[in-house]
Length: 123
Length: 123
Image (cartoon, rainbow over all chains, first blue to last red; front, side):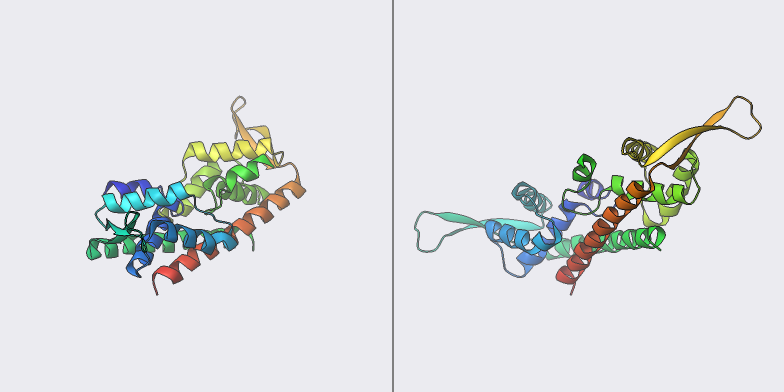
């Protein structure tokens, strides 16, 4: 899995993996508009001083399409006859589950590294 | 503080800041040989799948010298009359303290982001 290598350089979890995780969960829960996802994520992480860039979120979406985890469709927007919007849904539930499991391990590992740093340097 | 900007892009704590933190603490505790520090850190983080590169540790040391937090001296190695090794010591205790405080805030913030991700995606 080449994308796994790119996302794990051994230090903390990469932003890309983090965004992909949230995208999968949000899409599993039925919130699947590109722009809607983006705005929600930005709002949610603002109190933590983290404001993911639009371009980063779209790269994460693109990765998930490439990985075969998501699929993209088009629907008509509201009453408009002509305006279409992209919607995303889970294409392969097993793959999605496996990816989330991998990120969980990296989240746990990263938390341990941070906890160790707090103990080693501030006690 | 230009180095602060570089080290905080809003997502998790950067490796550079993490290494600088450990270097300061180790040097405060009197362990100040470049190579010795390096080997200790690599050994200590191996169980966490994190193996900092020599080049990264030296860049962190260089940063701390540039920041005026550390100073470098030379001492003769063992019985050898000619072989000298670089040793590092704290140059400015206040600056070191301020830097550690800043990294502490970023460690706490990063831990919160990881905790939130665990709650939001795995419960």
